[in-house]
Image (tube, rainbow, N blue to C red; front, side, top):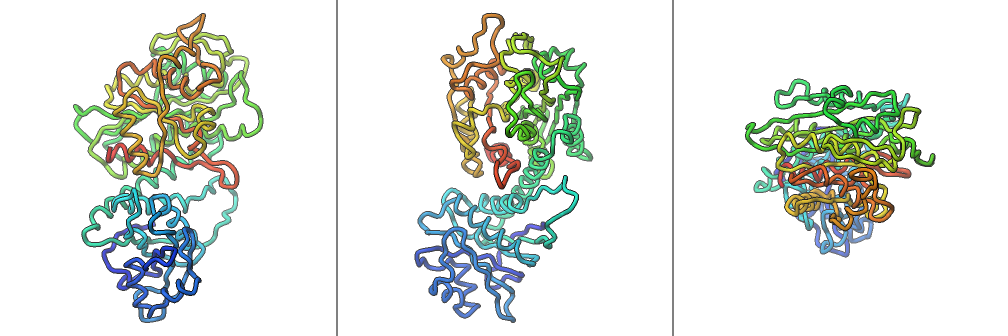
Amino acid sequence: MQFQVSTATADKQRTDCLILPVYSNGATLPAPTRAADRALGGQIAELVAAGDMRGNVGDTLLVRAPSGLPFKRVLLTGCGDKKDYDRKRYQRALRAAYAAWRKTKIAGAACYLTTESPKGADVYHRARLAVETWHDSAYRFTTMKSKQDDKQPAPRKLTLGATAKQAAQARKGASHGDAIGQGMSLAKDLGNLPGNVCTPSYLVKQARDIAKGDKQLTVEVLQEAEMRKLGMGAMLSVTAGTSEPARFIVLHYRGAAKSKAPAVLVGKGITFDAGGISLKPPPQMDEMKYDMCGAATVLGVFHALRELGPKMNVVGIIPSCENLPSGTATKPGDIVTSMSGQTIEILNTDAEGRLILCDALTYAQRFKPRALIDIATLTGACLIALGRHRSGLLANSDRLANGLLRAGARAGDEAWRLPIGPEYDQQLKSNFADMANIGGREAGTITAACFLARFVKDTQWAHLDIAGTAWRQGASKGATGRPIPLLMEYLLNG
């Protein structure tokens, strides 16, 4: 898809189709819609007055323009009540417009929804969201199908309307949205692939593909023997039950001077989680292929960084393995020594994500990060607490936590902060080791973060629990690509 920004007014725009906003409750037509209406001889106003286009959020109506005009069709798109028009309604309107467009054979369209001002979205974010939403709505996972069902010709060009004063910010937003949308699509592909394809070695290949040919990007891969030398006993305890070798992937994006401290992103990469000896129940176990969505997030972010080339340094760390039961698997009650030297009593082998993350967080200290953020599908408790709407955020730094919360709000990829503290940390006490790997049923998301906090020292650190937001269930089952928009907003504009 080609994206561009145009300062032409709607009535002068040469395009196959104008996408125009209409509000409900008899509100005055927005400026671009009025301009097109004048060119159409009042046809839009008549359709609205007759009730053919009510303007509710998600309503669409496709109208053919008479010959002689620079545009061939008009796709009227409902935005709801103007006083309630906000970023979420804006995205709903975009999705409705794109869905209606995809049902046609129209190759190109010019979207003037971007010229309106929903609450919570400036010019940059309106353009960025328009492009990100296109990528999200157009995404289809067909890699593993022998026949492609969708034979409809794909749209090829989306033009975003803007005024002359808005053009520079709109172009920046569109460029960022395109890179972020591509990164999200990559993350979705990786999450949706089955565990027999998307293995730790497959993630290594993806990392190398991202870095190939770019001097700012490099990749290191540690094998199990190297992990053993480093003392990564927690990481190796998780992979003990599988024949698939673990991999520890380190990506470097160097867009600034060496002296500038990097942001470090750590993504949980369990490519399939059966729970180990603490075997999960069979229903929905297939969804445990999504337990590497933290890793997919890091790879998606690095794809976007490659596309944009920002002046910053970022390190991505992906500890990756499978968690399966076998005669060699780690048993409940086993005690392992982490890379930090702290000992861990493993009371539940299905609490494995924190075991690979704790060694990765210890390893991350060598980069002296300005911010350390881990991303993980870590606890079912987070899904119970927050549902599928917001990612869980826990941190030892108010500054970092607030920055991420603001970034999530601006990007439309929201998080919610939960507390950590000594009263929760007490639940990790063990009679036999420095700590247990679980803290009981109560406050499961918080005690998991308390466990990780023991390995970050004084570094500014935040933990994003994406167990509820990384994938959808039901008819729209599949990976979401979250929280890439949040992280990219933080890195680019935080």
